Image 1 (spheres, rainbow, N blue to C red):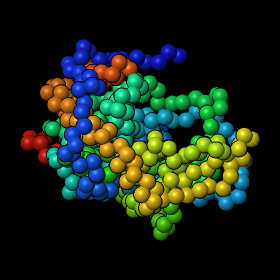
Image 2 (image 1 turned 90 degrees about the horizontal axis):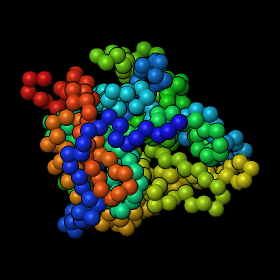
Image 3 (image 1 turned 135 degrees about the horizontal axis):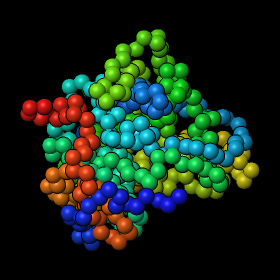
Length: 362
């Protein structure tokens, strides 16, 4: 099946940012300031139309002896948020915030985004030719970036590794999130003067105090039909785990992995190497934050992060002047173009959630 074109549903470009126009500002601080955990949630399968807030990540419990696994095969969900919330991929994040932060307003937030989008923009600012599209909506002065993918489902028929299977056997889920298809988490921080609310998927967490579920958790139904169940624990940052697998001899603490962990300030990296026959050696656990690896990645990529801040400021300048939804598109030509959405009447953020911005008359 052919891939959906990047410009599907878009009109002519309304602005562009050449990669060679992005320059690092040496006066910009690249350290994250005012870092705070905001919320988290689990999504249940689409047919259940339910999210659990704050929920919990799967609990890390790997085997302590070598274990043989089957390769990943079959159907896997690439983007659970888009699958359950096709009209507004960021809706579950916005629904979760009032549960854990009932007084929080979004007027002072400059950017709401998935981690993946910032990694794509960092790569573009650093000279990558990787093609991508990021959908954009602006509420008041807040810029919302939504992940765009050609498909929400991945069918694996040939060998692509053991990542999904490893997560299944090395973690366990409490009963109340047994059917969960994703645990997402959001943190806020300031980077180079830009106030960011960042969502990211969490692979697992270290065991903590057991949550007792009595099955009588408060439930509310949103105007869009999603049922929000208040249950679980907003897990502390030191327990959050990133999981990576790879063949024996492959380093799993690559700069790509460290980049991913840096944006979300995920401290723990759990790795498992496998032999040719699919036998996994005992897992290795490292605290990359305490080892100083995240700080070193930050220092090594100082100019790239400064370029990212410059790029985001240029994006804000363009998209805040576009009256409707738009999209950032890079087609491998080192030019990031801004296209207007072909459906100007389509609003992403549900009407009731606009109250989170203290908009007069809403």
